[in-house]
Length: 62
Image (cartoon, rainbow, N blue to C red; front, side):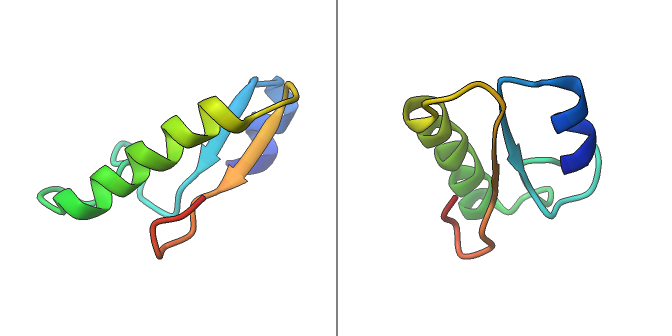
């Protein structure tokens, strides 16, 4: 999906390894879901240019 987001010109994108429809993680995996949300919020604060795309690291960091 990274290439599609770049084509669309989305201002900020956090690319995750999760299934479509479960972008914050598996059902019931609260620690992973919190890590994804935290990474997305960090991206909102740290992105300095339009079109910033970051890949979520499975260790919980962006």
